[in-house]
Structures are given as C-alpha cells and as structure tokens.
Length: 357
Ligand code: A3P
Figure 1 (spheres, rainbow, N blue to C red):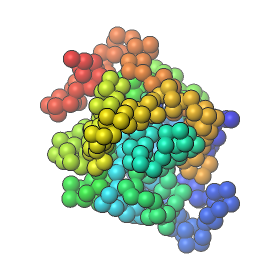
Figure 2: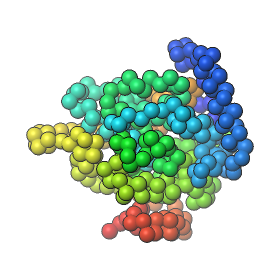
Figure 3: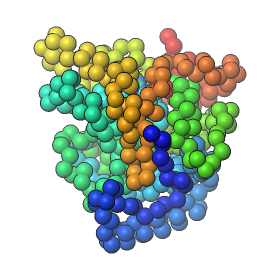
Figure 4: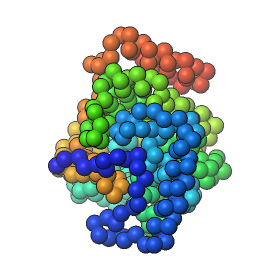
C-alpha cells in the first residue's frame, strides 16, 4: 500500500468528512474559515525555512512548524480542555513515541487486556493512543475526546512553551512523559521517515541538506535542543508533573524504566505483579521485534488527518542506539556533539556521546 499524503501540507484546507461520516456543518466551516484567516495572517509575518515533508516551515515563537501545525496549535489553545487526569506523551519527532505509546497504553490497561488478545495487535500503537496535534483536526470543533476513558492518553510533538498553560502549568494536575534521544540518532531516524512521507511534488532532500538544516535547528517542531531543554527544565522544576526519559536508558534497562513510568502514571506495579512477571510481559509485548512483526504494523496504515495517511511500517526502522555511526563522518559527529554541549551547558542534562559514562 502506498503512502498517501496531501499534496501540499502547508495549505490550510477545509476539513473534509472522513469516510462520509462526521459531515462538516456550516458552523464548523465558519470556524474553520476564521481559523484559516488567522493562520494566514500569522504566517505572513513569520520567517520561512525549508520543510522536510512539505515545502515550508515557519518560525513560530521560536519553533519551526508547518502551517498546518500552527493551525493545530491554535485549535488546541481554543478547543482542547485538559482534564486533571490526562497524561501527555511529548517528544521531538523520532525519539521513541511509538514505543512509549505502546508501553503506556499496555500499562494503563493491563487489568483489562490479555497480551494474547491485545488491542495493540489490531490497531497498532498510534490507533490506541491519539496524537493531540493531528486528532484535533478530526474531532474538531466539538471534541469527542470528552468521551475517552480516564486517564486520557495523548501524544504531542509541540514544544513545552507552545502548549497552553492549562496543560503545562504546575498548578494543573495533568502529567507529561517526555522521551528524548541522542540528537544524532534522531536526525538519522527523522531523515529516513521524512524522506518516505515527503510530498511527491518536491525533490527528495539529500542527507547532507537534512544534516545542515538540523544543525541550524530548521526541522519540523525544532530546534531539537530547545525542544528538549524546555521539557527538561520543566521536569526539573516539577518532577511530579513531568517524567523525563531517554531512549538509550530504555533500551538498556526497559524493565527499570517501565517501573518508573508506571509509578509516575500513578499505576505502580504491585509486588505480586512484579513477581508474576507482568513487567517483563509488557516489555516483551512492546519490544521492537514483537510490535514490528504484528500484521497491523506490517500492512496497516494510520490516519492522522483527513488525507494524511502513513503506513505503520514506517514507524519501525531499526530501533537501535548509535545508528548514526553508519551515516556521519567524524567531523559531522563532532559538530553535532559540540552544538549539544554548548546548548545544554549548565542544564545538568547530557545527551549523546556526552552521555556515555
Ligand atoms: P530508528 O529510525 O532509529 O529505527 P517515533 O516512534 O517517535 O516516531 O520514533 C521512531 C523510532 O523509534 C525509530 O527509530 C523506530 O525504529 C523506533 N522504534 C519504534 N518502535 C520501537 C520499539 N518498540 N522499541 C524500540 N524502538 C522503537
């Protein structure tokens, strides 16, 4: 099945009915027109950069976003009502959200489903755990999110400072799990993924060009370092609100990280569960080898917005730490490591090579 994408994702179009269901009312169309006008006005004032998937990204409040993402952000600010029990999974692109989605969903619902007949087998990690950024388009403007069981689980790629304070303020009780990764591996993973879903109307982006753009911070939802730092600082200030995880730690000791995650989510594993092997069972269910071999993840697709459909197989590539070694020269590696060192200096956070003890 081929990847079917909107020809130009930077064009804000009218929302369309999905499979003939959920027809768009006049009221919705009015709201949509108003929003498109707002977004067009905002975008007209912003600096432009080259997009990895669509033609352009715009520098909005310090972060590079496609026009549709700016619209989605406005919609979140205007229409999304967080609940005190909500848990958000946040990450820069390609840092491990597919894995975390599966782990968080399986942990939250462990009393409900057997691993032999688990929803992950049928719907894949994205199907069980909506992306707030994209789903807001499908559910908008009257959100069906209200009917989701608690705790509601949502994923987002938006930087911490871009989200409404109703979600991020330490006085709100909803929680964030943030996962980050060596920026060198995030770059390689993102270039592969974006190359697969890049608009067919555009010329392919070479790796060297992607590397330059990434180092300059120009990539969807970037700069990488500011994205990570925003959540890192917030996690230092409010550790009960934001759990900061690293992909590398999860690869090294998945059970230890999963126990930390379950405790943070307010659903710690009991001694009985630990002794009964429940932790290992969830780790195994959500492992790269297991998930990537489910039929739904080999042949299925994920609809993010009307007309934006991505093959599930594209969310699974290698699942390794350090694949950058197959792509970067020493000089390229040193440049990214030095950017990382400079940007993270004084923050108490170490990533990538610097992270190696
Ligand atoms: P690679 O491209 O390096 O293989 P995201 O899910 O945030 O889009 O991140 C995608 C990255 O996570 C990809 O990395 C993908 O292979 C990896 N990944 C997906 N599922 C995984 C899992 N269950 N365990 C470990 N890594 C996984």
